[in-house]
Length: 195
Picture 1: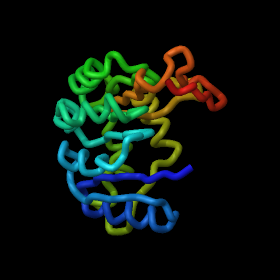
Picture 2 (picture 1 turned 90 degrees about the vertical axis):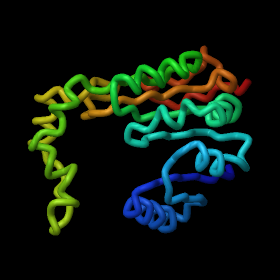
Picture 3 (picture 1 turned 180 degrees about the vertical axis):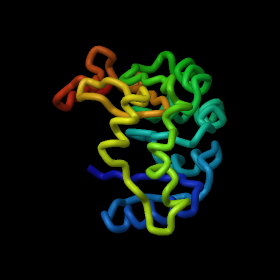
């Protein structure tokens, strides 16, 4: 089926990397190397009456975007699913409240061990591109074990996953039947009849 991916990415290095990945994989896309805010969101979505998925992970600025009435109107009338990375308990609760009438697919609160999750065992992974000219140091088995010991994980139907931030995955009830909604426990793709 025809598709087009739309991106807003503020960090110049990430923007260049994203552009390279899209070109290497021949993915039809638009890329705006600026902050995801109501103006840029409107510009990216203006030509689209149907939007399958909006993924928002904007490092604590989620409410600034989602509280905007023009953004909410687009979400309510054109977006089928949203994935929102949340970066504090307050943001998580407020985003969940804003979309309380949507169908919850996944509701993962911010890890209560969040402050411990950025300990020395993960510094080499998270910050090594900034600290070491030799390139990134990727986590090994000892790092993942330490993260689990620290409580920086959650249980899923498919096993334990290390995480720090929260996440909400929600389907729009305007387009998706609640009785046929997808679940992370599903082993096979479930297709809802569109309303």
